[in-house]
Structure formats: C-alpha cells, structure tokens
Length: 123
Image 1 (cartoon, rainbow, N blue to C red):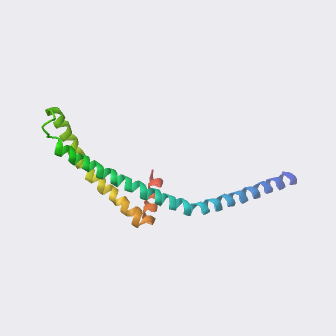
Image 2 (tube, helix red, strand yellow; image 1 turned 60 degrees about the vertical axis):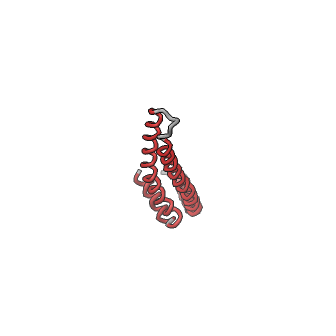
Image 3 (spheres, helix red, strand yellow; image 1 turned 180 degrees about the vertical axis):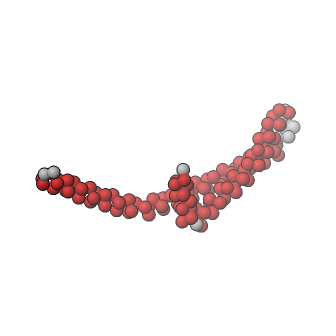
C-alpha cells in the first residue's frame, strides 16, 4: 500500500472516530429529556386508560340497571344485559391493570422506565 493511501485511510478513520464520538455525546445528551418525556406521556396515558375503564364500568352498570326497563323489547333487554355484564366484568380488571401503571408512573418513575426498557428489549 502506498504511503499516500495510508495517510488518507488514517485521516478517514480518524474522522470516523471523531464523528462516532460526537454522535455518542449527542445521544447521551438526549437521554434525560427523552426519559422525562416518556414519564410525562406515561402519566397522561395511564390516567386516560384508568378513566376509560371507569367509564366502561359505569356503562356496564347503566346497561344492567336499565336493561330490563319496560319500554325495551325482549331482544333489546337481552343484548343490553349481556353487554352490561361483559362491560361490568371486564371494567374492573382493566381498571386494576391500569391502576398499577398509574401508581408506577406517578410514584415510581424510574421503575416505570426500567419496565418500559425491558419491554422494548424483550419484544
């Protein structure tokens, strides 16, 4: 290999190493804001899921309560009753599942981030 080619290759490798160091520093600088944004997004998202499951339980209760109203025919009462029971059974499970993540996002954000990272690695 000629000496000129070796110098060009060394310069190229040196610039590649410098660029890698800059990218690594940039990524390290972005980690704290990224974690803060994920925690805030998680807090909002988990509260929305908790409210949605509460709404599901309320709708289930209303369907069960008014599913046997006099002004409904038999098939409508049956559909409303089945829908109400399903909503009222699924709602508490979804609510408890959501409550776990709400508590985690608000009171244990580091654990929330660790579980989020773990889920990304295991996918």
